[in-house]
Image (cartoon, rainbow, N blue to C red; front, side, top):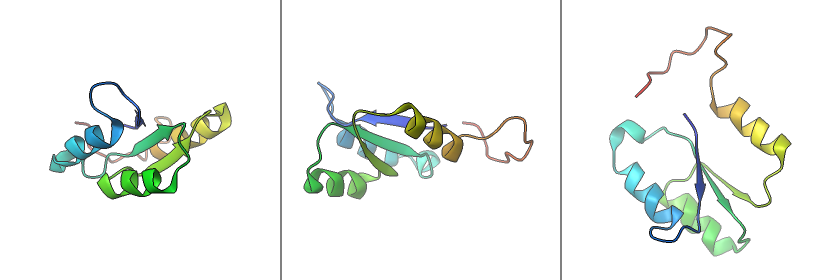
Length: 86
């Protein structure tokens, strides 16, 4: 699994959502990639502190998204995925 987390959501921002997700031990290793238009260093630091795995700025390029998927999602044809599905 891979979560692409927008940091600027209306009701609960992405940092709050990430912090909530990280409260559950089963999601401790879930990759969460923060996506934002903001380039402020303090925002990046805060996102990393609450548990995002990576911080990426918009616009998101297709090649970068493909690279993230290859990095974090198992290749079903390899037969090497031993992670548990929850």
